[in-house]
Image (cartoon, rainbow, N blue to C red; front, side, top):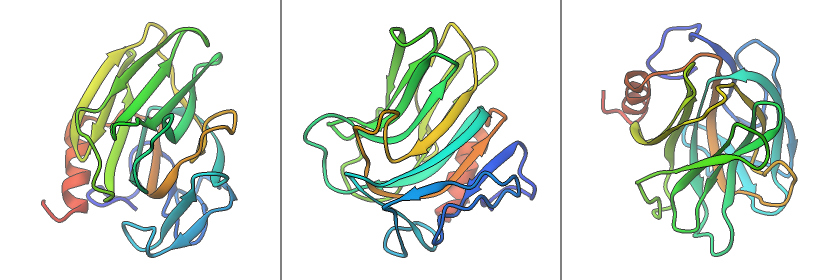
Length: 211
């Protein structure tokens, strides 16, 4: 259960403590399927977390109608080649969207809304080169506005022309199994409602003892 919100959390469709497995604690039965995941205290922000090796680790899902996804993450080292994928997903029926680490240490979000050849990219202002856990949130509202937050602060936004929901496919790998995440992920929560900036700030503040 996330800090700072009474149970049941509004719109929660899946939640993952990642304490030894990728079982869904929401009660909706959206359990993940693991490949090469290392669960340990060293990989966790709160208790255990999931470790990803950068070459084969992934957790697969099939969760529809997502408006908000939140997660704690820590990368290992600095990518020196193409983006390291953090949480890939689909947006709409025809495009593949991806939340990723850029080579310069920022979180990026490629949003496909009009098919595979049309997408927009938003990048965080904050550079994450400290190899510590950070809190990421991506949301989309009914008007097609897409927001990206890091550590409770809004980083960037864009608007897509075909408003839709996210479809969460996997954690740790892109949609065609070619780019993998190297690091740790903990406390993933997936909602079918758009969480606002106040909720996101509160979640982060409570989680780090600042509220």
